Amino acid sequence: MGCGASKPAETPSPAAEPYAAPAAAPPAAPAAAEYAAADPSKKGYVYGFFDMKDPAEFKNVYSPMAEPTLDPYEGKFVMKHALAPPLAAKMGMKESKGFGTTGMMAFMLEFPSFDKAMGWFTGPEYAAVLTKRDEVADFKMAVVEGAPIAPGAGLVLGFFDMKDPAEFKNVYSPMAEPTLDPYGGKFAIKYPLAPPLAAKMGVKESKGFGTTGMMAFALEFETFEKAMGWFTGPEYAAVTGKRDEVSDFRMAVCEAMGGSPAPYVPPPAPGPGPFAFASGLPDCCTASPDLYKTIADIEGVARLVEMTFPPGAKDLPHEHPVHNMYFLVDCKLKISGPPTPTKLGEEGGVAEVPAGAAPIFPAMAHQVENVGDCDGRAVFVEAFPGCKPCGDIEGYISPFDVSPGCYKILEQDDNWITGMLTMEVGEKDDFHHHKDHLIYVIEGDGVTIYPGGDEAAAMVVPLKVGAGIPAPMAAPPFASHTLLNSGTVPLKMLFFEAKK
Image 1 (cartoon, rainbow, N blue to C red):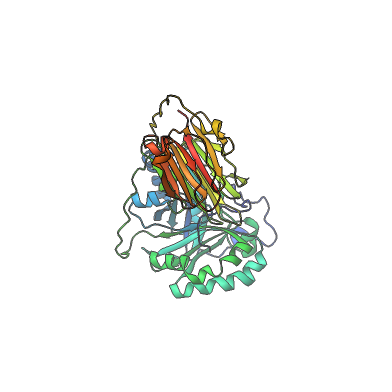
Image 2: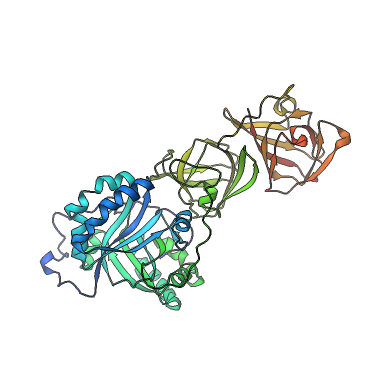
C-alpha cells in the first residue's frame, strides 16, 4: 500500500517477464491434483496497468479483437479507469492518484474462477491477438484469485516487491492494516506472483506479463471517495516511510464499474494546450500541472516553464518539443521513455544533473521522476509551433560582445541562446540589443532600465526571485537598452533568447 506521486520501482521486478511454470516444483509446492476444489466464493481476475502507444489503433483495432476472446471463459470487465488526468477528464472519470510505475490506464477482468482466468490468459484465442496488443500498448498484468468485487466499489490495487520480507510482515503490515479501519477498507486480493512464494503459500501459480512484482493486492472500499480518503489520509501517510523502507509498490486508486456511486461532476477537460503532438500525448504543463507551470510567455513565440519536483514525485506521460533547460539545483532524475514522439518505455536511466547545467534536449516523449533526496528545480524554454523568426536588427550589438563581464553564454543551438547576466550592486552594462527573450530571476531585488540607452527615460523595476519575465523585442524597453543593478543585492538573471 502506498501514496503520493508516481515513482518507479527501485529494483527490477521478479515478474519482468511472463512467468513459466517451473520444470520441477520444490518439495513444498503441492501438485496440481492436491489443490482443493475451487472455492465458489472466490473469483479469478486478470488485472494491471497499461500505456497506449497508439490510442486510435488500440480503440479501433485491438479492443474489438481482444474483447470477444473473453466470451469462451465467461470473462468480463469489472473495472476500467483512466489514471492520466487528461484522459480521465476526457472519459468523464474521477481523477485517480497513484504511486510507483503504473500507466495511463488500469483495468480488471473477472472470471468465475482462477482456472477460467488462467485458461483465457494462456488460451489460443487471446494468444492470437498478442502481436497487435504489443504493437499498440505496453501492459503489466497478472492472473490472481480473490473475493468478488462489489459494483461501484472503490479500489486501491497494484503490485509490490519486498526488500525485507521479515520486516514487511512483522513491522510494516501490523502498522498499515489498521489504517484501513476508519475508511472501511478490506483486502479483496492478496496473491503471490513469484513462483517460489506461491509454492510456499500453497496457492496456484500465477502467470503475468510486464513488470509486476512479487505480490499482487487489491483493497476494496465502499466508494471511490473512501478509497481516495484512505490513500491520501493522515493514517496511511504516517506509515509510508516504513513502506518505502521495506518494499517497492506500484498502485492506483480506481473505481469498479456498475453500482450507483455518488453523483460526480468531472473537472473541465483541459484544452489541447499550445502543442498538438502526433502521439496524442499532452504537453508537460497539461499532463502534470502540479509539477510544471508556465511562468512567462511571449505570444506566438515561446513559453518559460518552471519544473518543481519534490522527492519521489513522478509526472505523467507527456511530450516536449526541443527544449533548452537550466537546472537551479542538483537533481537526480530517472527519465523513462526513449526520445521519440510515439513510444514510452518502462525502463529508464538515472541522470545526476548538477546545479547550473544547461542541457538542450531534443523533442521527446517521456516520464520523469525525482529519485533524489531533495526538491528538483529547473526552468526551460519551449518554442510554440509556428514560432516566427524575429528578423534582423539593423546595427545589432550583442550584450555578450560589449559586456562580457556581465553576460555569459551557457549553451546555444541554432534557435536559442541560454545566457546568464550577473551584476554587482551599482554595476552597469553597455548599450546593446536583444531579440525576443524570456527571463528568470535567480538573485536580485531591483534594476533600472534605460530604454534605447536614454538616461532620461530611466525605468526602475523591482524584482522578485523566482519570477519569470517575458521580454519581447516589440516592447522598446527590452529591444535595446542599458541596465543598472540599482538593487541592494547582487543580480543574477537567466535568460533564453531567440537567435533568429
